[in-house]
Each structure stands twice: as C-alpha cells, then as structure tokens.
Image (cartoon, rainbow over all chains, first blue to last red; front, side, top):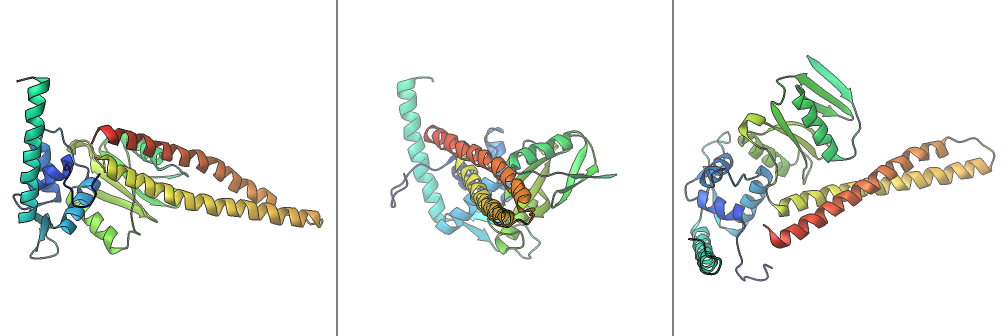
Amino acid sequence: MAEGNERCALTEAVYYILLALHTPMHGYGIMQFVKEMSSSRVNLGPGTLYGAINTMLVKGWIKALEGESDSRKKEYEITIEGRSIVQDEVKRLEELLYNGKKIAGRD
Amino acid sequence: MKTVIWKVFFNFEKEEKWLNDMAAKGLSFIDYTFGRYLFEEGTPGEYIYRLELLNEMPSHAESKAYIKFMEESGIECVSTYLRWAFFRKKAADGPFDLYSDYDSRIKHYKRVIAWTAVGLALNLFAALLNVFIGLRLGSSGRSSFNLYFSTISWAVTIILIPMLISYIRKIFIMKKEKNIYE
C-alpha cells in the first residue's frame, strides 16, 4: 500500500504514540499514557512499541532526548514533521468520521 | 526452594504455555540452559512469561538496547539462550503480550520459521548422512550404530515439519485478518 511517498493511514499504535509524545516520555510512559487515553482499550505491546519508535526515529517523526547519564531512561519527543503527520491524520480521520456518521447514522 | 526440570521443547508456543502453567502453580521460572529449567517457589500466578526470538544474539548491541528498553518498561529478562529471550512481567500489572499488531507478530513468526528451517535442514542432512554411512558399513559387513543414530534425526524431522506448517498457517491467517483489521 505504502508506495512511494503517497500518504496512507497511520496504524493505531503509531497514531497514539505520536499523540503521547507531544510531551517528552519514555517507553513505559507511552504505554501508560496510551492505555489511559483509550480507557484501557489499546494495550501497546512492548515489542510493537519498540519497533514503532525505531521506525519513527529513522523517519524523523520523533527524536530521542539526550539523557544526562546512561542510567536515565531514554525519553522521546515528537518533531515538527511528526506534528504535521498527526495533523494530516486528524483531517483524514475527521473525513472518515463525517462520512461514517452521515451514512451509517448514530448521533 | 528451587526446582530443576529437564525438558526439551521444539515449539516455543508450547514452551511458553508450559512456563505460564508452572507459574500459575507457583513455580516461577528463573533460568534456562540446554534443556534445564530452573524454577523457584513463588506466589501462584505472580508472573506472565513471554518468549521472543531476538534479531541478534543477546550480547549484540541491538539486543542489549532492546532488553534495556523492556526492563525500563517493567519487564524482566529472566534468561537468554542462543537468540531466545525469556521475559516476564507481574500479572498484577495487567495483560502482557509482546506484540499488539499483526505486522510485528508476523515478523516474529517469520524469524522463528527461518531458524526452524535451518535446524530442519541440518537435521535432515545428519539423518541422510547417517543412513548413507550406516548402509555403506553394513554392506561391508561391519556393524554400525549410524543407522540407529539416524532414527533420532528422523524423529526430530517428523516433529519439526508439522510445527513449521503450523507456524506458516498462522502467518497466513494473520495476513488475511490484516486485510480487514489493523
């Protein structure tokens, strides 16, 4: 699906991780935040989270914050590019939601 | 009190289930070396165990970074063996699965399949070699244990092939699900 630079839907994990990282957080913090935000519906697997973090670091959507010492947990933060990715996704989701409500009803 | 149980698993899913069954009974797994499982007595159901085949050996920087990440997330790496890592988390902290999406789960199964296939190939080679040597020695009148040895390899082959098929089938099902669900 993701051919070339054509934009496609973010996975739920990536979307929620990006939201979480609007505040600097470490891995465990992200898991807790996403769990709370989704009322325990989304339980990020640590393996999945780790993979997503690494992919997004490479893409430049998030960055690792330099810790003062090695013992400190590594924290991550969203980048400007990451923010614009989220904003595009919110627009896409709004369209989905609008059309869903219009056709399938439920208000 | 510590308990040692000797056991051989080919299928990591069965191994993981067994470790969780033991944990439910109050025997918490703490170490593994070549068929030797070490348990210590604990509270029944205290831990949930998950097994993962790492991308690299545990001593590799990539694996070390991953294990550190896990430990920062409240997950303990109890033991490693070859590329396998044995993780556990307190059951009180809620459900524990390593992966929450199809993609990473599929990737993990692919890794397991690749290594199982390597094992199967080596094993088949050993089986055929032993049959060949056994027959050669047999025809020259000398007694040989090679034919008997080869039965072990054939038995392993018979275990590994259905296991591989079951993993491949799982990937197939996950890919189908992925067409509809995330």
